[in-house]
Structures are given as structure tokens and as C-alpha cells.
Length: 210
Image (cartoon, rainbow, N blue to C red):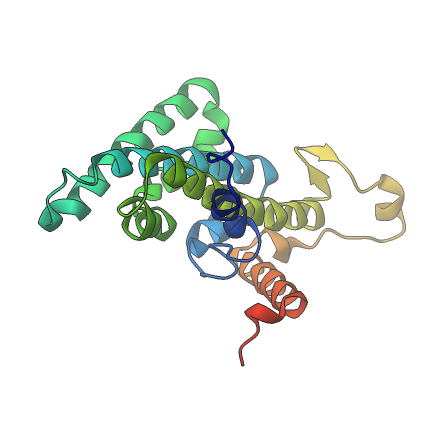
């Protein structure tokens, strides 16, 4: 049991959530961060969907890695990811249809997410199932973390609400406060991501360019 949660495994899980975040450090998965973060709910669902898919795809590829011919490894990875994305998409349509509609084609586009293919190729093909699961879980949660932060500010400042619940009191509007409609546009997601990257690099000297 202690080996399962060794220092190395803990680092494999925790590093992508903070110091080696796939979005803010590796700059992967930016497109969906721009597209699905206008509201908090679809951002959370998208983040969880990617987390589940990358974690289980890592495990499957890790289990198969010694039997996959090198020349077709990318095809096998795509098939595994496509199967998991299809399952997640159908589950969302069955139990969270409204959110599924909001996410539109972006659930299907998880298949081409750079984070997924990067972890399968760079980690799962060279490590065991448990380490690969932790790596996938960590990278998925790191991705979801950024989506949630971006969506929080965009929805709060753009519509004055979170989960369709009014947060900014009416008294603010009576005093002349106006929701920032620019926050609901994709460019603001990029600007918020840039602010997160700046903050993270300013706090961690190891990430600063020398």
C-alpha cells in the first residue's frame, strides 16, 4: 500500500495540478478553455469528462503497451480515446442533456485534445497502470482547475451570476453597475488564462525563464 502512494507517485499526481499544469505551463488544451468557460456548469462538466477520459485511457494504453506494434500505436490510442469519448458523450446526453447541448461538439473534440494524446504517448506507453492512472487523474484535474477558475470569473463578471443564481446584488445595479459583456466572449478566456500564467510564474521561480 505504501508503494502505491510513494513520494514518486504523489508527485506524478500532484505536479500537473500545480507546478506542471497542462494548460498554464505546457500550454495544452487552450482551445476548449476558450470555448466552454462562459459558464461554470459546462466548464465543470468538461473538466470532469476530460479527467475521466484521460485517466482511463492512460490505464488501458498502459495495460496494452507491450502488445501494441509501434507503427500503429497512435491509431490504437485514438481508438481507445474515441471509445471513451463516445461513452462519456452518451452518459452526458442521458443524464445531463442541457449541459451536453451547451458543450455541443466540444465533447467529441476531446478526441483531439493535446493533453490526452500527450499523456498517452509520453507517459502511459512507458509506465505501469497505477502510475498512468495517477498521471491521467492529475493532468485531468489540473486542466479542470483552470477551466473552473476561468469560468468563475467569466460568468460572475459577465452575467453577475453563478449556476444561474444571482450573486451580485441588485443594489449594485441600482448604483449603476453593468455586467461586462466582454467577459462572455472567447478572447476574455485567453486573457484570464494569461493572467493565471503570469501569476503562477511570478510565484514560482522554477517556471521563470532564465
